[in-house]
Length: 143
Ligand code: HEC
Image (cartoon, rainbow, N blue to C red):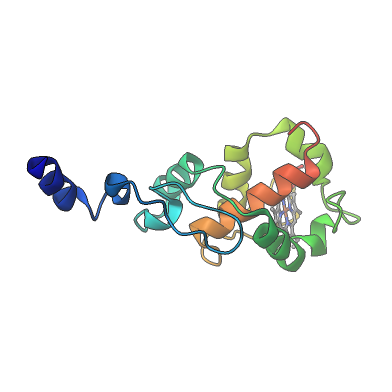
């Protein structure tokens, strides 16, 4: 099977799964699949959004919880029901898709003059996925 070995060597950098070795557990209990969001190229705008949406399910809930507490709770409240004047994610999340949540986080949201900041420059792809994982598991009873 020499030729298969060489094929693996050639494709090895792009396809780490070739030798069957599982990626290392990062300590969070999360073992990423062979091609993870962190191996994706740096993209912007709609291209980046599409890549992130392709990796839904790779978010880490504990990290998402910490990010939510730091960045979102000041407006949407710790329990997601929304502080006065801000929308309740508990009400909204069952009505929007994960992809729409990604879009809102990357582009911000302003339909009635009250602004939600965009997180496209402050969040990595993985951090976006982490917050989606936390919000969807915690605030969306239909999940
Ligand atoms: C400074 C306050 C503020 C922060 C911080 C904030 N948001 Fe928002 N968010 C808003 C406002 C205001 C809206 C509604 C905008 C509008 O209606 O024009 C909104 C809308 C949303 C919506 C759509 C809800 C709906 O009912 O339309 C989602 C989902 C959401 N935010 C998630 C998040 C997440 C996740 C974070 C943290 C990464 C976050 N927001 C941080 C203020 C904030």
